[in-house]
Image 1: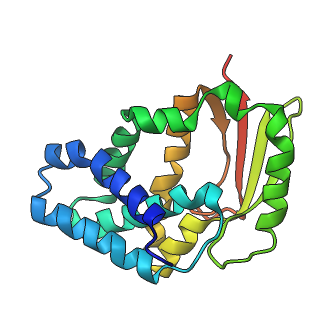
Image 2 (image 1 turned 60 degrees about the horizontal axis):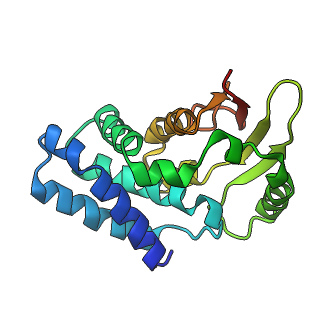
Length: 201
């Protein structure tokens, strides 16, 4: 894919956000430079995905791969760094928005169109999703049948680390003040990922 300004900016954002964690884990300056360079290399050879809604997730997946190749730390340690970085980043929290904004039923038509567009599979590494409107069991549901992060991890020969990024979904839900229930993920061998969001009570 192209190393566009958006791709650079998002990678730069994740890199800056992780600096405190790198220092706490004694990741050298040289290793941190290697992470940035590896992030760019992976981005340039990554298959395209044209879903703007999930571009940040795709770039985050690429960045996590670069972390695991260059930081000298375990996947669990790298997960802790990126999880803490996102939890403590005010800009990221603001971008996520509130539970009320996320679960607003006025957005359902836009989400349905997004889901239908995903099924056209315009690019190989896009996500493919079904959107489930509010019902008596949850306020908003997603069934992800294909996952861009799993795809880029598989392309890069490290599918086993995709499961760590799945855990970030619960952190982001908590940051918005919503409850997430999920029983399976593609990264853990499921046939799809079942996201069920509800307002916390």
